[in-house]
Amino acid sequence: MRQLISFSLKRFKNARILEAVDGVDALKKLSGPDKIDLILTDINMPVMDGLKLVSLVRQNAQLKNIPIIIITTEGAEEDRERGLALGANAYISKPIQSSHLIKTISELLAV
Amino acid sequence: MTEERAEKFLELFNKGKEFTEELLRENQRLRYRLASLETEGATGSNDEVHRLRDEVQQLTEENRRIAQRFKEVEEENKDFANRYIEVEEQNNNLANLYVASYQLHSTLDFREVIQIVQEIVINLIGAESFAILLLDEKTNELKTIASEGEDVMPGIESISTRLGDGVLGSVARTGESYYINQDLEDGGRVTLDKPLAAVPLKIKEHVIGLVVIYKLLQQKDSFSAVDYELFSLLAAHAATAIFSSKLYSQSERKLNTIQSFLDLLTTTS
Image (cartoon, rainbow over all chains, first blue to last red; front, side):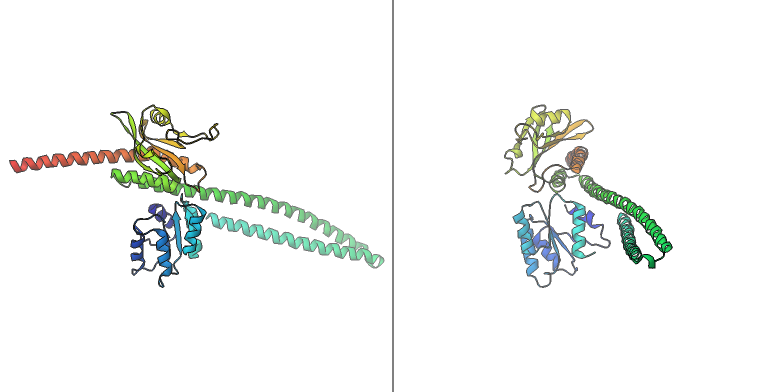
């Protein structure tokens, strides 16, 4: 999935991608020196899931304004509502459509 | 490029609209003026009335032509919008196919190849429950080597069927993909041997296994056109990727054995 996302992001010139293997790794990278403009996360991840990650990012004063997109197999309406209620800006259900992903990212980053 | 063209079409379309509106206003004004002159009767000049009548007629004709052109441009615009959607869809499909094929040939590790096939089936096709079966050429048996969604279709983790037996065995024997017929009397009820789809993994005409799909994700109703393309891609590329990685791991093992043997010979001599 990361490769499809990376490929889709090639549409955005100068975009640099930081990959993380789970929620904990993501938080570590988010606290690093790189300025992050957007977070794309799955829900089902080992160690720390995507919903917990969204919740922790939104509670963090330095990170709380970063737009978050959840990409997941969980397509039920209640899952979507839960993700958005926790603070995600967009919720994309698999299978991934790169055009939909690009459109969502463009809207969130206003590019 | 396509967006620029769309904008140009829209611009042309808007200009036509503005021009038509302007002509309609002018037409209205002249009609009003004509009516005023007619009511004025004797005080007005007949020549002026005729001139205005001609002008109104000309403008009406011009208005009709512009309305016709307006309609044509509107049609072209619709056609262009449809083509834009088609191109976008094609682009999306090509991205999926490119990534799938790129991923499949990115490694020679057998477990990793299987994991990539699973990722493609989940992320690009949108399957919730499926199994990957490999054919044991010594026993002629198809056996599950990886599966997902066992809770939805219990038993998929341990499918074992002989070549030629049932739907799965037939697909492996004939090399022809199987898709369930939803119009059947039982409504296309899915069972272990009657999946939604069974796609043979082939190297030329030689079947080495199957990808069997039992259930799609909740948000996906049916297979789309690109899914069939992905199945074709999986049929060929996944087969070669799986086969190469198996050969590679076998040759690695043999190499290690030979190396150990050579080491032993060197130390003893």
